[in-house]
Length: 370
Image 1 (cartoon, one colour):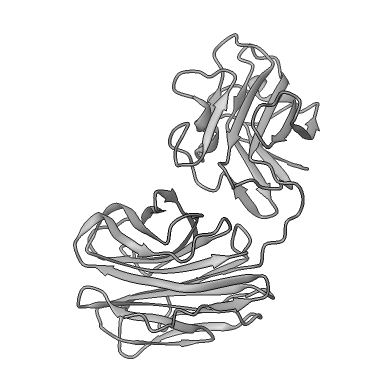
Image 2 (cartoon, rainbow, N blue to C red):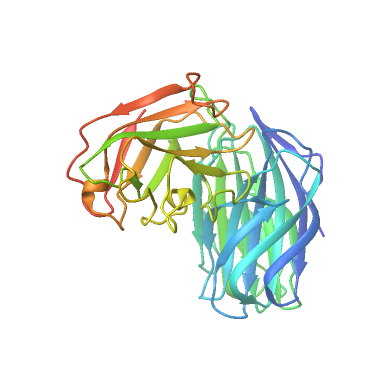
């Protein structure tokens, strides 16, 4: 049963609230927690999910969705090869409840979640930490005006917990011989946080993550297009292993894509593509990436749409050389542009012009400041 009252807590420019917790002892690789409370709808809401799963077979958490929106893993911890203790975050602007779906790479015997809503925060964590000591203990920096979250799980005991330097939100048994608990704090500093069980446990783990208040660095754009005007002599024209766009330390797209339109609301597109290496392959975390058909030539372009309400103000971007093509196919001269409507018919802003990029090595990563 949740222990934290629902009036919420406030830090300067940032608010947060514990919303829900749930457990399941039905073994499987996918756990669906239906209609979990996620707080008041708002365009700047992030839903924070602490997740614990254990036993069954070896395997980590491969994905978390909240109302169909993909969450991003902030931190992973957990003792042993069968224990997972994670914190994930998803931008969920609408609804007051949602199905939270936890997907594993293999079957687990039990799973639990804790859910918080957070508003007015930066898009990615300020600091993260994890611990598998007995008891779990780690330092976490909580920035001024920010918030820190903790999630802890153990196996082989129905122990209760005592948190140090975080305020407990819930403390529950999971399947009769395990427990999980969550906590938070908006007191800034770098405290040592501990999660102490009341009795001997095994395969314990603690995950910690903090966020700073949102501070917009500049003009935000929903659409970004890399326009390649020259490569290093290959007839193929366009070849990108991976394209990553950054807003300070936050990487976008925040989730690896599995098709040109998944996960929602991401959409990848291009001027031309080879079968098997289509647009989204430049945003799926693999250096094999996107490239155009043989003899397509230049110019070519590659584009990412982050979705309505998800515009970012970029500070840099990186390109990874495509592992499946020779370095002569790598881009030599190119621009990165941002747009609010995606037309790229004169309304766009050229954010960076780069020329003379030669002598790429296999899977080399080059970063460009905007």
